[in-house]
Length: 475
Image 1 (cartoon, helix red, strand yellow):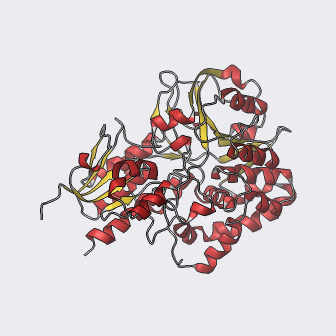
Image 2: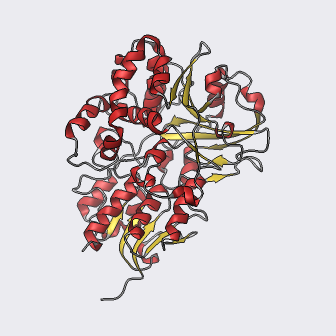
Image 3: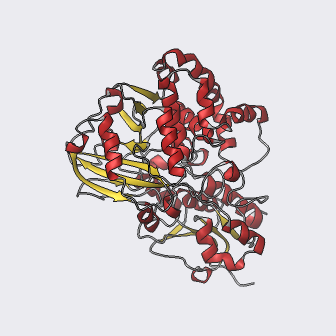
């Protein structure tokens, strides 16, 4: 038998590709990462998109799941340049009356802003916070029999609910608004089953580890992962665009940090008809329209709590956010979109020239949309921060098509690698014993199109690499 050039090759250098490669390299294998762009990182890139000296996170910006990730936590990334900055207020949710509700690392402080819902919040979230260390590895894993089934079942009772139904646990508009902003990270109508899961996870992660910002930009996390990988013997080739299997060196295993659409183009001819059919049926979700701003001063939110938050959810009430997400899922561009905004330079002075600032924001739009949502987004920010537009020095926009051109994993602007609704929560990308195996021996998917789905946590790559190790290399 001919000797392979590598034991394993990973196609794509996003957080999942890097995690997969690190796991296999730690096992003593020879591993190569190939990346189509000139720089590594996937959704973990930072660039001067507007003006010189203004560093913008191109996709992900705030990293509660990276800080919580069991695999990333096991790595000495701080030795390779990663420094997380934690705002005292993880997220603020401004309201039309000029006040804000907040998510902070202190569960008691968060609850204290919710009035008569203080105890309701503590009753819902405190048990999850207490069980988080044993619960999180179960949540960030493929479907399996859990070590603590009763604990997971208790979480699942609420997590499987539509977010607008779980909101009935609260009496006040303030608590319902805070909850809606968290659940809207699911990028689907809040009436869908399982939309409560992401809200519960993000809130709990905030109470355990905050919502940290990588100093210098999200690229710092990718660079630290890559530096560690190289330090333990791994190899990375950039500017290596893969269109067919024939382009790759020989290897015993190939792991793809890409979505079903691309893997069908590259390796579909090797798959069984059934598996090919399953991947062709895979569904992508809503897209995003993204803005990056270079600013002359911090965003002048009316609420001082919003000025002190790393992330700001702009959508006012549960009803308004739910209407925005529902209309977007129906192909309609809302006049008042739910906006997720990050203001990194308030906490990290390396992001902009002295006295200046950067901010980042996006709203959900129909998949494949080319509509310019700049005015709609900026009107929403101005609504809670009068004078915001006067601070703008320059802006950069990404519509869904431009996002996909930047990163082909963002099909139609879907940054989650496929909708994570009930139909694809446990069966992404196909209903199989192992979601990471393809029907071709030695070929695996390790992207966010596999469990546990989107988010910068690396656990899709970690579990896919575990599967490849057990299938091919473990003796």
